[in-house]
Length: 560
Image 1 (cartoon, rainbow, N blue to C red):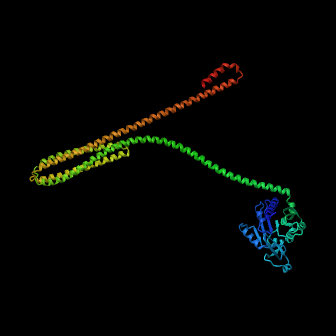
Image 2: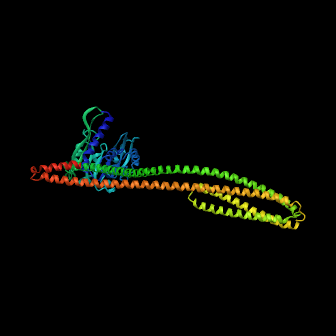
């Protein structure tokens, strides 16, 4: 058996030992003391088991191995683990030990031996303390599991624990022992067994049975033996402990399963919540779809209305084009008025000359009086047209924004006419002033008649333009009145159509309600006939009522 195979076999035996003692310590925190901990192999295996470690003391006398063990446990950071760089044996002495790669063992243990022993680079000295003193110094009252692996130094360790053994303060001892009584590597197992028997410790089981693998012999070389105190064995019946451990393991498994079920329940609850949200979202979606359908219907209605509006808009566009033409014509009138202003300036110059030479003012005054009468008539006609236009505007208040724009343009035209009237009044006042001046200079003006005739012709032309503007306004008012009447007629037609449609819907609902009532009456009659038929069928005179049955059957057929 190779060295690697021996290590694998030992680990297998160690796991068997842990599995065997687990039922005795299941669910109870224990105190574990490892004498000869090396690199903490046994401690590591215990931490992976179901045994609960409450207080751990790892004793390793080799400084080099102690440092390795410390580095390994620094990664664990468990406050319940205590490391001790001492040797367990006899208190108050210093022992010399030798370091042989993977093991350390005591060479000399007395002052005389140290005085005659030879020094070696592989040797080192370390203080020794008995297990009883070690327990006292670390406030350890009871050891649940004591593991001893000190390479032949087992008897001094056990002898130093006599007080604890006598009080059976150690429950289980797991110790390495040799099979060959002549071997110096391990303590002979019978010496260990005999010593422990004095304190009522009995052998529990044997593990890690290793043969003489160095010389390839089948003879046993060493074993690891588990001892139990009598009180511990008495308080922990083997069968009952295993059964309790099995129940506890089953209980732990059930707890894990329960925890998993609770996790699954939480997941299911989450999924249920998600499904509820999806259902709510689906209900909202159905409501939204219904609302969308309603909106689609309204959209269809709006599309129809939009088409009607488009037709109206086309009509308004056409009217706007007419308005543009009117505006162009008004611009032409403005240009002519501007020309008249220029002409009036020339007339002013002429009149300045006429004032000096006019001799016939009486005829001019008569003519001016006639002009005043005509101008007053024009003002009266314009006021009537303005009143009519205002009345038309009040009737067209329900037209669209585009029609309001048209009215604004018409208002501009009216303002233009007002401006023209003001200009005419101003010119009339100027002419009046000129007439007064002509009265003074009438004797000096010989060409006054011809100048006044020219002025009369220009005034007549201006009157014609003003009349033409009034005619254009009348045409626009007529168009607006016609369009307003058409629009009102269309609205009245739509109202009549909706009213007829509502009457049809009401008629259909009334017919449906009447049909429902008739159907309910027929069902009631059928039920009464069926009940009568069943009563007749169950009577004792069934055979004597054949004609009645025929009548009932006929009634049923009629009802169907």
